[in-house]
Length: 150
Picture 1 (cartoon, rainbow, N blue to C red):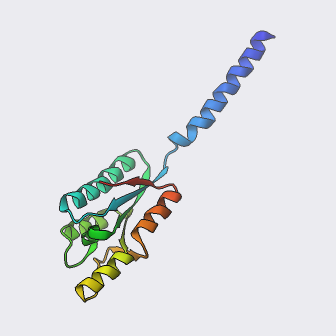
Picture 2 (spheres, rainbow, N blue to C red; picture 1 turned 90 degrees about the vertical axis):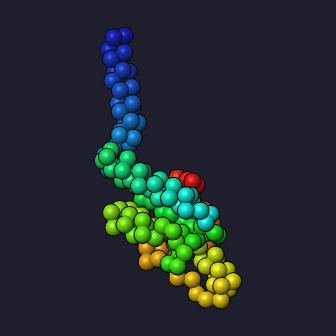
Picture 3 (tube, rainbow, N blue to C red; picture 1 turned 30 degrees about the vertical axis):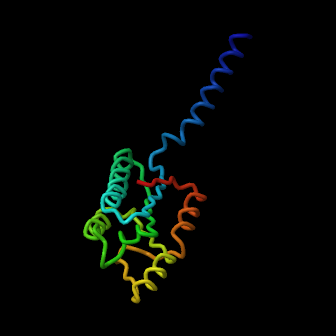
């Protein structure tokens, strides 16, 4: 009787461990990464792009995928400006190679730059304007995205 009970208990334990471990090992798991750029620094911008490139490579080699959104605001908005981006050629190339990238530009920063410069700031074609960069980062984190700031 004791041996029968022990066998059932061990079998159930194995089922519980298997059930808990399955989601972590599931093929095709989706990951979410939000990258924050708030400095007009080409080194930081390239680090952000490297983070996106290597995260994509890592997860795709595991048979998983990752959605990545790079959010730029404040001085970091220069990353996504048509006239001042030091990385626009690299962004264009990466966007062709990686379909998992999105670039969000802070609308509040754009308004401030428009006013200061007396002209409308133009974004690179890969960028989408959001109302607020900080709010966008908050929304992504509330949805479970992992936050990284190079």
